[in-house]
Image (cartoon, rainbow, N blue to C red; front, top):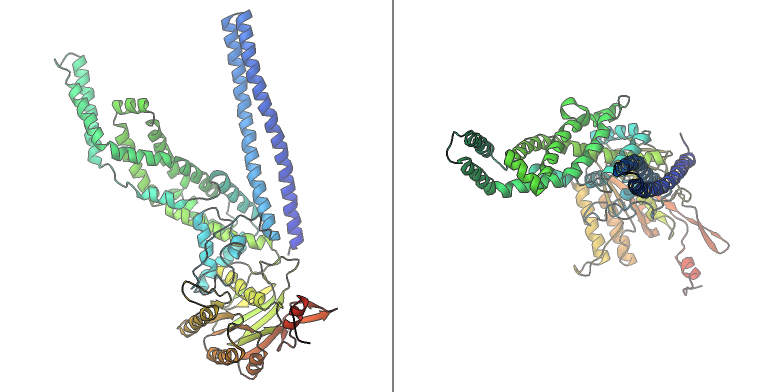
Length: 606
């Protein structure tokens, strides 16, 4: 296994080389700008001087030679500009990779700013979505659809073992393919930008499916053909009157009655030209990438490589029609083209046919692109963290959660403390500990890694063995002044939802995480309510962890079958507290609330 420090050094070296090359390209760009300016100015001066002192023909020749040299220089300058832009984007990608590895949130691009509804069983409690979340750390998708798909995997309420095991195998194959990942991301950033809007393209393909009936094209063609025949007959002297003018007037009258529909179709086609070009370049990369040695990647790229569905062929056909539609955007050229032929009718007719073909293919292309982005986001997590592992997802009945050296992926590696944890059978863990000892972080650690495992990704643990679970968390409570909901009442409602989930018939057990149960009420009622709630959890289709400061609850739970006590503690060193964040068996033997109050200068009893 590659050490994380080695992987990070490799990233730093790549970034340093890219920035060095970027500096060289920038210097070349500046030099070529000066060369072009000097050559252009020199050509004008030389051509004028030769024309004055020699002859106009010699001056014109000097101008032609100079401008030809200027064109060659501009060609090479454009190549340098393209290389500079490519290296700038690639450098930014590598810097973001480095930021993700170091959890440098200022340099990680912001992801979705939306949060799941408060009713979601666990998303908001576990920091899976939103600013500085697991999703933001993972998400390298350029398309909104890819980002949303990754969200849906992380927050799936009901596991699908067959799907997640298959997805995990695909992610395993993609982890070492860093060059493919970088090149695809480079193609997306270069040609699409920061966000690909596939929905806009889908809507365009579905619009104007048959704007001009074929009979209208036939009428326009007949009128144009008749005009030609009558004009020839008039020129030949076969007709005494210019009847062709009547036919031409009929054609233009017919065109005007259909012009609004025609212009709407053609204008929308021209507006989509850039997006089609960008999509074609990205899909062209997937179409031509050699993935024969990677069977799962080859399967993912199948919609782009099958002879009948290759994007390059279909997009090129539509691009040709958008080019023809663009020609008539010039009013004079448009009038000439439509005078010589039923140009707009023909373009709209063939465009409708090509759009129909494309509409049957593009959704599959975009969906597969989104899936690739989401899978590569998970694979990228494994690549940047080679000490992570892929979990063993068992499909047997019962409850099982066995972890070795499990840590929280949103805590920096240098200060992260990993623990071993095992839960076999329908147990309930009561976790006690002093303030700031790590109880809340630990249950979030369990939940986040379980969510990652069930998304098909790697986990922050040296080993993890689980069965598929439904997840429910009661950690982050939100009160509401407008709805007259206090923090305590919000917790009561949340715990009621947990019991409802626990009693729902399901082949998958519920894995629940409750932080500081009934924290918002008095000691006596908290103890009585917690004991009753704990009894309601036992013997059901679920397992989980409850944290509490209430040592009486821990002692009473210690006498119940199916309940196990674990704890965190602190050490007092020179009148200060030291936390080691190590998980231990049994009930916490220490308390520290008065110590913390005393350290902060609050009055406490002796």
